[in-house]
Length: 71
Picture: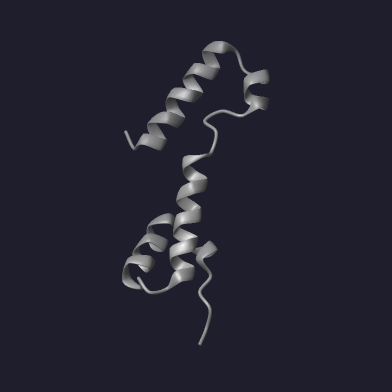
């Protein structure tokens, strides 16, 4: 039996795989880990805060929030 490399799957592929293989505990853990990482990823880094003007920071934050929220 071959092992599945969840890291090579896109977010959508991993979700679909997990839904199709609900008894695969490793797939479930990989899916939850990835969701957790995405939810806790900073919108803007310290380096960006230090290197960008306030206007540039606001623009970058707005763009990233739109992407994160799917707007």
